[in-house]
Amino acid sequence: MYAVIQTGGKQYRVAEGETLRVEKLAASPGDKLSFSPLLFADDGGNVQVGKPELSGVKVEAEVMGQGKGEKIVVFKYKRRKSYRRKTGHRQPFTALKIVSIKVGA
Image (tube, rainbow, N blue to C red):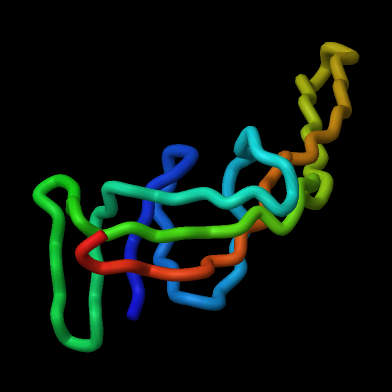
């Protein structure tokens, strides 16, 4: 069984037991989160599509930790103007483990 959730302006296809990284959420490790309503759910052939959202289906997840992604170098340059700027960025994330997907919740 899998479902499509939306968080942080992005959509994720999730299944039970899966771990994923999403945009940073205000939660500490060990907290339980639930995502409802959903956009799509497939229960072994029983497909439910939300128009625009599904009610009665819930995804429960556990926060595994918070962290930062790999560094991305941002380099700005203008030719013949002695203009160079080098900065870096590390995007914060929240690691989630999908505990269960409940239909009819």
